[in-house]
Length: 278
Image 1 (cartoon, rainbow, N blue to C red):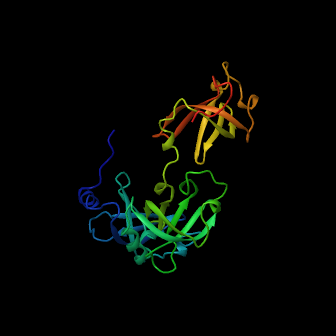
Image 2: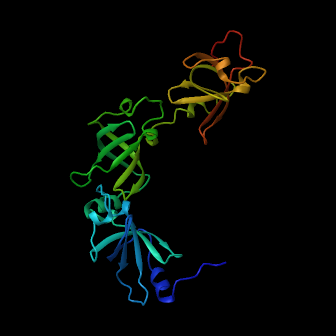
Image 3: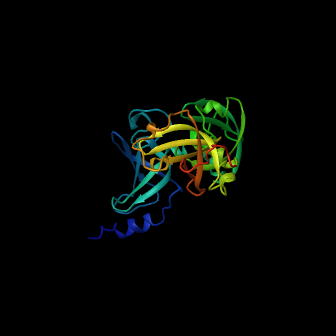
């Protein structure tokens, strides 16, 4: 069964709206977790309604929409999407909350590099003051997996507060006023030198035991899996039967998958002397 289409005038109006553009409207309803606005520019019998959820009203911490807006207030917002079933527009007022910040963000592009200074380091990631951003803003953020190819205990192992960094822009979020950066994207993938090393023997440290195998680090930023079937001629039930975390072992590189960044290792049929062949 097909979904009912909006009335023709409203349908035509909604067809003119594009995600990412800026629109204005008047607050007509304040609910517990959202605000409804009547979009400017439409004069049909049925209202063109925008829906702004609590998290998209403002970047400030609030518990109820009434703390940020009032009935009849005129708002400027970014269109997120058009909901044809409800005949409403999803919108974000927070994306337009700071015009200077919005202009800065829209001037950036994914894949470009950008510099900045580390403002603070936390266990969940790193905040960066980007060059050129508005005063008193901190728009850059680096998630822990994007800091380095190598294994780190804490982000502080990779960067420190006050340090200058250069990262690749992997996302620009006008709603949150944030730029996602990656330092790792500008670093050489340490797995690449092993691309043609299938069959060679090396040593590594067991970093983690899981029910079906053990992860072994053979170089900084390079870990591979020894499956339970690759420890002995007969499969073991758990890797803890043959190895321990932190133990140094000799392994053979079975397969290197650069696309999925997977490294398959084995301890079967190794040279008697256990020496490296690489």
